[in-house]
Image (cartoon, rainbow over all chains, first blue to last red; front, top):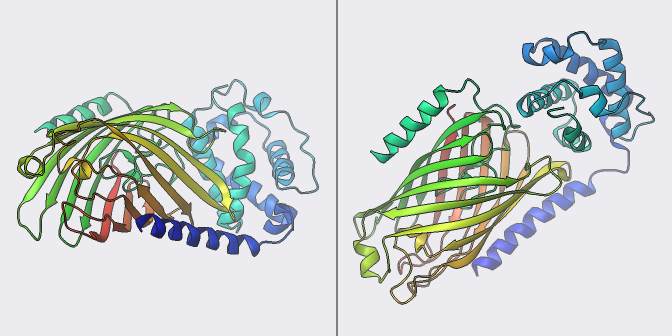
Length: 143
Length: 278
């Protein structure tokens, strides 16, 4: 009896998820979020967020911000299946010697989320972008 | 008194460190479940309470109330999470017998260790093992119903995973817990039965969707033993949680707890508020 009600609750959740899934199209994530223009906005906003975060800004001391913006745009374009190739160094090369802590990593993810919010990227698109970036974390922490 | 000692100790520990918990994404730290462990509402999860990363610690507190047809459960408690590795918790249960009169109190002391992984970032689910030691303060009803003991210890193994964007772009979280227990109704009706005081393995599970960074909803299920032969039922609930900040969360659930001490169909509202203090 109770098990049946529980199964029904799960069925309702699955139905909602399926309905929402059907509403999405076959466009690439890159197209769905608004292409090059949105990715440039995210990158600009992200750099702005970092400039106003004294903790994370320290990691960028002495780095070439224009190059950073360019490579990050390429990377965001590539992971969202846009028409770009990432031409920068590997994540472990870029972050080697920085000894990035888990909490500073997560703080930076929060800044990226702020940047995506300000660029008008929807919550669901944000999650899909984060899902593409998440596997890179292991090459970035405590190196 | 023991509670005061626990929090005193927790504050002392915190005073020696300068870094408070800030190291997880909002809504990924979960809540405190009924017995104090980091988790959902009725199920302990592999995640630790609080937002500490491996370089930080955190202290969380919560209060929960479940209004049933013939009973009312009050829970107050706190937990300390160390370096996203070890969690210590303590709660006080007060179970009002609103129809019969009187109440039953119980203390639960919990510890949990994260064995593997990160709920978001590792390939496999985060895995933790924990214990919950329960000491019944009012033993009369448990004895009268034939319980074997007024104290008991539950052991559990929990696996939890967040899948980013997996539910049509929404983050999906699931948890599966196996618990060895001889507690009757959380321990409020004692432990075991005079002819049978052994542990039974029970399965518990949670499934939730994060509809935004601040709003989650889902279902939970908890299998329970029936040591006393009173037809103790499995529990389940549907919940909505609002998490406006890392320091405050509020959960409203509909809980179906079945038969309790012979009173059938104990259903009602579950309300919990909590958050990270430090």
